[in-house]
Length: 491
Image 1 (cartoon, rainbow, N blue to C red):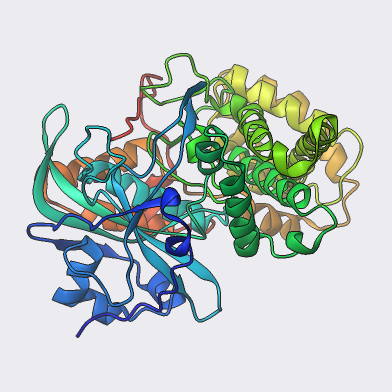
Image 2: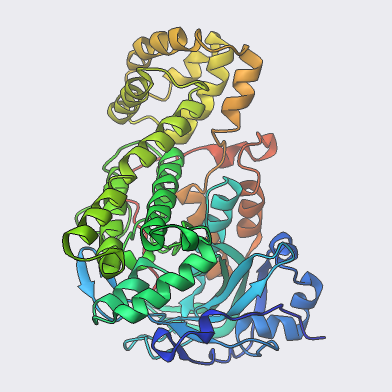
């Protein structure tokens, strides 16, 4: 039985300059590693059909589902500050857009499905490790409530790919609100193709900002919407200690979803200068730099839209006015998010200083980011639990002075200890994709073909705010944090 996808492929109906028609390469011997059955249901897909041989072949790109119109999309991008005018989907194929039962549109993309006209000499394949990493981390982000692309399935292809050594080949089936990026606009703007920029903006508005189309200045309203979404998104990253690792303009989605989990990672010990990506030589995309980089990238989008915003100085003024909205939107989201993490449900003057002082002390004391905030949930309800927070700091007395001021501030909140603890626990996860756990899961799968650690870690991460005492060890940082952990893009 062939799996049914309710395709309606609006992006494939755009002119040929927007994409290339391409078939995914045929996987030699596809084997299903993981199927996200709840997500399949949200998309209106029959998980049972997807697990059948024909369904597996569709997910691996060996067979086309009826209604699929596979394309590789064109885009450009600033990569670590340098502009490349032609990038595009070099190892991904968009099978089509599915209309879910809720009426929403979702891209279904195969990542690692072979060469396309944008491959630039690459093999277009994906190794098993990066596929498993993106599956785990993107689904963890979804469970944390952070806007993200999703993982529908991971599959072995039955082939090997050559990186530093031979590795098992794999495909990730990725789901997104769309794959329109800032770099997609740059692709046309760099060519002086204003009409295509306009057409892309109209398409993106219809898909993500339908209200903007009816505004007095629709393209300004569209830019405002993208700026606001990205400000809120990056603030959410900061709340959980997430470091994207490769915030190039081609990796920033217009929809406001986190996209492209290549060299991403979560912090253990807090430090604003923390980065993990092996290709980020100078820490351009370090944790503390992420808000500024997001604004830099949005400025590149505003440059692309200038011809649509007006003439001359009028257009520049409109773009600048839109971009000035980033800082207040980000700061408001950051204040509210970290306020919830500290049990401060009603904003008050001085809250930002209280948060900043704690983070400074955590950085100096090498305190674990996730554990500090999680243990504060218990300390908020019972001062006797302070000792568990103090133990995370190199100098525990650094916590004491701050804790006194924090408790004074909590006294102004109309909430009892038990309610505050519950509210804080809903904002402070116990479980994140700890880097050493992700690496253990990948190593077991790649070296031994053992997917048990991957499956168990996925189950733990699907309930990040629950205690899960049977899996308590998954909340612990590595026994020895050398600070030398590095992540790799996988291309």
